[in-house]
Image (cartoon, rainbow, N blue to C red):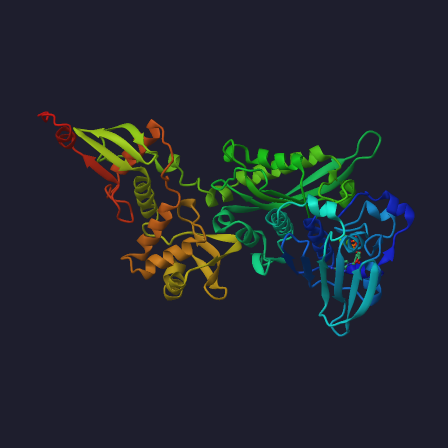
Length: 560
Ligand code: ADP
Ligand code: MG
């Protein structure tokens, strides 16, 4: 913490050192990165730039804009068991910093060559501390406030360590996953990662959604719902008095359209530190319940804040695992928080379930269907519904048909009204191609009438604060670009064009298996549309194969 700098770096006493989980901290390059990133976060950094060459043994460099160190502290910081974060064993339990053992810099310096350049005050000259082959040299250095640590020749004199490393791609992969975890644990901090001179990750430090865009993609981030859950918990066992405390679980839950096949997309953090904790991961997955199909895993960011006394980070030398007092109570609270968040109206609106099949295929009173006499006889490639109608075979494109049904429902519901809009919180950032960006500029007023609220955010990037939400169905932020593009193409009625795009989003996709009953309802609703034979974008919804065509193909006489 920035504040703890004032106390300065000092050496811990023996008794405290002995209480600290022992073990080799620096086992691979990713551990160096983790320790340096944690130091930068403890220093209150707002941006942290990480560079890695090769597998990391060649060079690792971590630069931050945190509080920096004065010369005296910098020279002491590289010595074993020196820290500014705790004074003695009594402080261990309540340490609210990521570091507290005072051994990371010394261990790194021991495993390689370490050069630390730092400055605590822009008006003063900075300090360079270089530790190589056990020798420490201190010199003047020019540097703005903050700290840069560069580690070279890691494990140069430890052949066994070197041997145990995986391929450069795998070792860098670990660094990359680790940095993604920190970026999601601390979305308020801007992170960048550069490998062999090429930037591979950059988060802007503007919140979870933007971090998800950088780490995953726009689609994943677009399906994320922010959540913030608080629970009053009580702990105390046996004769201990019960103590009440507050648990806060917040972050983003991606649902329900985006899932993954592996379990490592539940990003957990406890008090700002990414952690692996199987019980908590399971709690998050249980909270999703059936929103995630079996065999699939959710993408989620869950950050817990709990009193430092209830967390023991000191169980693992690298602090990758933490012990939670009352782990079960915490896990239950997390599961409830996730479940509640996923069942609120908000998610149903931003997920792909609102204009679901059930509501969009509900019968329309008194309507007459063009396909009243059609009987569904099957589905082909989960894409086409096959029907028998009179003497013909009617093939219906289920996606196009559902778009048409949704489109006419939207149009009817919004006949004389402004399109309702929904605020995006937090606002989404979208970057558009130049054509779409030009469309946004040109048709800004029309887009605002359609329910978008947005502002330029530099270049072709826009910050989208509200989107159209017809029938309680919230458009993706990306709809801004799509709608602007259709306006730019000069589609006859911009409003219709926008509704057509919105109707498309929740529609059945190719590959959705339909049961017979659902397919029947789809065909009935399509038949009731004003224009059942084309989707809102003008593509056909149905093809009719006359019996005569089949008969002639099979060289049969036509039934008459
Ligand atoms: P610990 O983090 O457990 O205290 P370290 O060996 O990692 O131990 O760091 C020793 C001390 O050096 C820290 O307590 C802190 O005062 C100082 N320090 C290390 N890295 C930074 C940094 N990036 N910015 C400011 N101070 C730092
Ligand atoms: Mg540290």
